[in-house]
Length: 292
Image: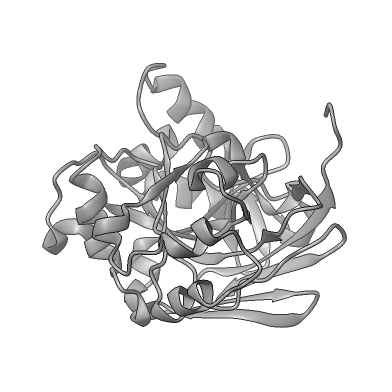
């Protein structure tokens, strides 16, 4: 099943090139959820609500996907986690760059276990329709396409062998970054610098997430190709590692790492991310407007 959020916080099931509105299910789930719950109520409720949501979608008329405004498919993650330097060719790429501050290239341990993962602010999360409001045009702002795992249930100290039992599904993400000497999470948590989309795909639709291809084009020019079989820490190991530090909650999102090919973007650029089992999103880069 493919779930999207669109327009004014509506919930839809994507079937082919149509969106079928099931917002009533979302309303009922949220009404029954505790205000102080950690995580996303809709993702937490999916195991018990999925059949009802599918039945509602079957009865709802479809509207073209290209006629709605796609938001982040996850409304309320408790955290957005991200794996740095999880492809060997990207590590080499970053270490050999001469256009970045030395501290940005010298602090690249080859093992995530030494580097640690990092967090992106929830306020940085946007969907494809919202665009990327580029700040600091005098600095290098770059794209990083990634497969994103969405946590489905609460867990901590999760062994790798059971890690995928905790995954609700997958989406695509752009870990946008403003290069500089500041802390990584600080530079990567600018408004609009955590793109998610086009929708959320339940885990049963992807037979092996450790063997899918993710691509990114900028203005129709191919820039990045990620083969998740090349991840240094595969998805199970990533979840094991994160959950040794954190409790994971339904709706938490986990950016699994970007491959080589990162490049600078500027206002007016159009970025297109694609993964065949998930779909394709398009997002535009624009200049940040001060005070808005």
